[in-house]
Structure formats: C-alpha cells, structure tokens
Length: 254
Image (cartoon, rainbow, N blue to C red; front, side):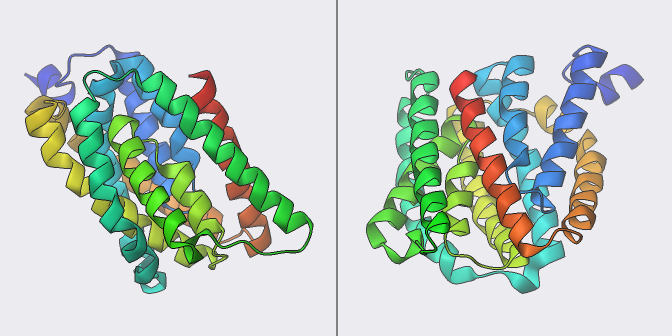
C-alpha cells in the first residue's frame, strides 16, 4: 500500500530520485536561474520516453510557473506576453495534429539551430554596442509564438526561444523571471487538455507522481530566488545567454 502511494508509476529508486531531481532543477529555473530547466528535458526522455515524459513534466512546470509568479508577480510585464500568446495556440494545434507522426528529433535540431543563430546575432550586437529588440518586430513576435507553441507541445522545448526573445528586450532580471512565468504558465495550462484527451500522456498515476514532486519544486524555486538575488544584472544576462547556448546544444545532441 505504501509502496503504491509513494511510487504510483512503479519505477525503480534511481528513476524516482531522478524525477525528484528534475523537479528541483525546474524549480531552480523558475526561481531565477532561467534556462536551467532545459537540462531536464533529455533526462526525462531518457527515463520515461518521448511522449510520456512531456506529460509527466507538464504539471511540474505548471506548479513551478505558479510558484515563480507568486514570488515575482510585482515585476511582470504583461504586454510582452500579449504579443506572443495569440500565436501560441496555432503552434500547439499543429503540434497536436502531427505529434504522433513527426520525428521530433529533426524538429529539435531546427529549433536548436535557430536559437544558436539568434543568439549569435544578439551577442554580435552586444559586442558592437548596438541593441536588437526582437519584440519590436510583429513578424518576429508571431514567429516566436508559433514556433514556441509547437516546440513546447512536442517536447517542452520552448524555453530557450522565449528566453532569447525576452532577453533582447533588456528588461530587469525580476521582470524577466515574472514575465516568463506568466507566459509559460498560460501556455502550459492550455496544453493540459491535449495531453489528457488527445495524447493520453497525463494519467491519474502520472499526476499522483507529480504531487509527490511538489516539495522539490518549492525548494527549487526559493533556492533559485536566493541565488539570483546575489547575481548582478549584467552577470545575470551573461548567465542566461550561456544557459541558452548550452540548452540549444543539448537539443542538438539529444
């Protein structure tokens, strides 16, 4: 009885601890160490497989977003979210339609290449003392929302793309974190019915497992907030750029 309560998916101890660690890492990411959660995507795929891992990870991400918004809500910039959200739903719907047939490895490669190229452009502008703001272009905003919705539904892999988009606006780190929490939280909530009814990747047992991961998420969010409070704005920007680059490389080598 106790075994089934604490291990509803009946996984071995190593995978259970790995899942708990991924929940903590996602908490760290939402708490301020932006992009760090991307390392959990390939780890969860390795432990549970492609589609099952996206369904298991989604409620963890939603709770992490809620906690991050609760901590940073006063710094949110809602207008940045409004630019992208109308384009997210078409991306999600396309992903739902082709999700059972597409080989997501190829798409991940394309996403990674786009991220790396965009990152290179922003770093080049930084180096030459110029500013580039992706949010000022309606076309780039639409492209980010559409591609982000697709990437998020296929493999919870929209993080680097949206982080890069927000980073280009040069908003303060607390606003960066809060605005990201609103965007991801809203997008992830929209995805839930598709995972439950279309892909059947969220079940009672997987959700039970998610509930057991809540302490790890809470600990991660507050630990991430504490660490972030010691990081200056410029160092924070460099840290996020570095994590975005590493996340893109993870997508390529997965």
